[in-house]
Image (cartoon, rainbow, N blue to C red; front, side):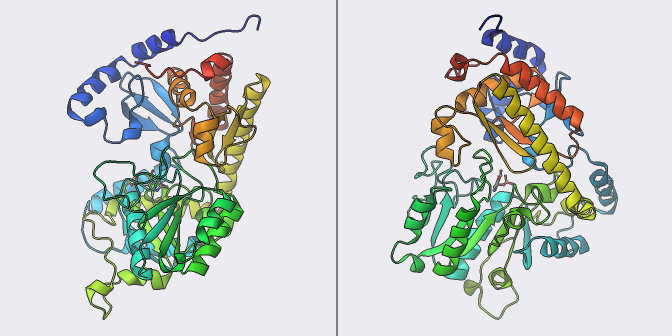
Length: 464
Ligand SMILES: Cc1ncc(COP(=O)(O)O)c(C=O)c1O
């Protein structure tokens, strides 16, 4: 096309190295003492990650003083953005009262009461520290309650790296994701084809399943697998199957909890699971998670029953569970969200819709085929390669979208222009103003001018 600008990838890499020089130096040191230079795999990306030093509102700053409009928002945990005053104030007050008690305290009771009020499935709550613990405990509760062992999860479902659930997350969905795991027995865990009603219904009609199936765990919207929402009829199929098979339906709402509504995705879809796991937003930026659900299931972990301990389920027990700082932060945030009721979610939804339609228009005008997935304030951009609609499962993302362009090259181009995304998208927070979103859209426009089909299909991964 006449006058079309072209992308000089080498110049972009050079620009990145120059602007993030201090990060590069520090990351080289990190690689000497931390495997891969990180403590969470997702935080390393080519050519090297920027190292963060401070944050405020919708932004963070790196070691070189560059500022970034942040759409990663602490693994999507920061619904109010960085350093929200209501949370910081309560944290400071809590620091004066005490850092760590290791005892029951009133905030714990208050927060559990709030969860039971807002989350439709919650009748009782057990708090823990990370999402990984919460999902691991939910599975154990389900197995203990039903006396059965088999768990179905979704292809692409990420529930944290516990040995129970680190299976079928990326690419080869029938396998464990790691060495060092117990044998991946198909009697213990299997991955279902997400959103495929026919194939899933066939698996759920296998003879004898009622005697084997303990639980189905599902994210109502796949999180790390690119924000693909479940079809409502798919969740209903799982709900009906669990009731029929006397198995426990677990919604992993660690991303969707307090993100899509006060009652999470179960309120949004109007489908109530038996157990729910929550984390991320719940802790307002501090480590806090929860398993909640039906009384008779939750009470299987009640230590005060007459049953001997081998007839109870042992979950919880972390030194830092119900950490006073995390509880203070959580209560401040949940009170803020609930005081404003659905207005908060209407605002997030409106920001998300407007931003997603701006991005869609930018690429449509340049005849670049894209789709956006994600409920409300969550968004992921997909560059379509063979699909003519949004992907509905992770296989389609891997096989029919320009996946590596988005993960590597788009990320680099955005970083050079002060925008921080994850998987080509992220979470809009209450701190992102309309102007921030317009500025981000302007950066996407500039990048869209540089994209051609050759660049989209480049498999160049050696960005360093
Ligand atoms: C849906 C879901 N479940 C569980 C987890 C694990 O939570 P955590 O990282 O707090 O252990 C995550 C983390 O990203 C998640 O997205």
